[in-house]
Length: 259
Ligand code: DC
Image (cartoon, rainbow, N blue to C red):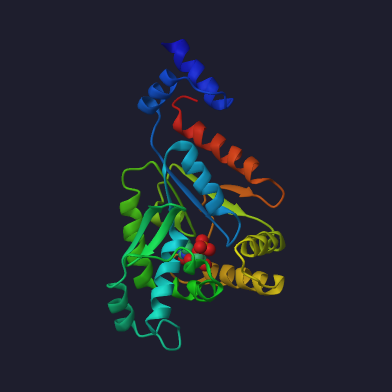
């Protein structure tokens, strides 16, 4: 048995294929953990977190999508959320009418707002421009953090956002903090937007992401910051595959006992 266990560990660490019996054994011994992925805007958190969750058979939760869905609801319903016009009663009342779900669709997992698929709309620039302001509101954060904690209560989850390792799951077994050069982030984002048929200038994109970083890092409630026990990945000069390999290595070291 001991030899078998060592062989399974070796295969995982050297990324060799696992036999059916090793996989069965793995599911029984490996710890289910929470993986918190935080970091700046547009630095590939969701690409990495989604791929990591798929590899591990974990649930993936994009908390940015939740804030975006709330922002979309506020915009559609003229909820007064801006600092100079904010009405706390109206905000609290509006949030009570927001229901966010993640559902499987033929084109993958999508964000639903009150039963409507809003996955595409929440990625548009008019939402990106407002979402950081909506995210500064404590009532919004309390509402979403509660749901995020419920989604991760059974562990086996990869969650990405800005405050996952500091506020949502301060005891997460693995915390990854991602960063990259702002110019490289803007170039990647521009390519992604173009591939979706959205035309935008480099200046507009870099302005949006640095402005979001500024608001996200300086807000009073749960600002974006690196948790003390987080592992930093700067992906300016590494490929998504190399980044995923790094994250998988960190994960396996924690999940496999005595490794
Ligand atoms: O990850 P994203 O770019 O889709 O997130 C959109 C915005 O939501 C981001 O600018 C800040 C906010 N956000 C947050 O405040 N806390 C989180 N856990 C996730 C996102």
